[in-house]
Length: 233
Image (cartoon, rainbow, N blue to C red):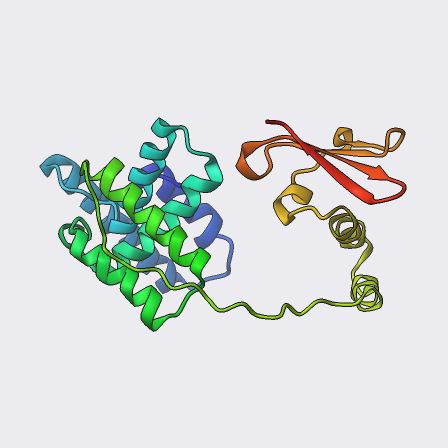
């Protein structure tokens, strides 16, 4: 949850972080002095029109606002914001972050030095293109980065016995969710967002709401082929 710096947040921080522990008097005096200094600094910045948010906070807010205007899904906005924040921290300043050449260097670093997967490279590229076009207002953006596909690898897959042995070690709180996720092939976010009314034991169906692509899906039990999916168009 993002909170705007101010007296209300300072009071909450004091109650939830400072007063919750037994501290000596000189420590409380230091905390109080620091909080007074911070609030006074905020007042000076507000009076002179200075920006008090960090570069990361400004970038995240800009991506969230632009994404909401474009109608992007919340998960897409969060993914783009995460990449742009990392890019801003790498660039070090707002001026440099607005330079497509810096974006090209950042993506080149991800491809050549970090050797991230092709899907991750594409995700970072889409996030920066969105940033330069929809936040910075640039009409044409060509970051001139050649993405490298990762050679195919043989996946490591657990046997059914290994999966059941692993699930058996879970507490009862998580065991049902794990079994449901494994049997129905649900994503973690889809399992965590399930409600009681989404599970129909009579029809043997599970309704997944706002899944990937912000689509609703119906998962049902087929006695011959196992679980099947039907997603809304």
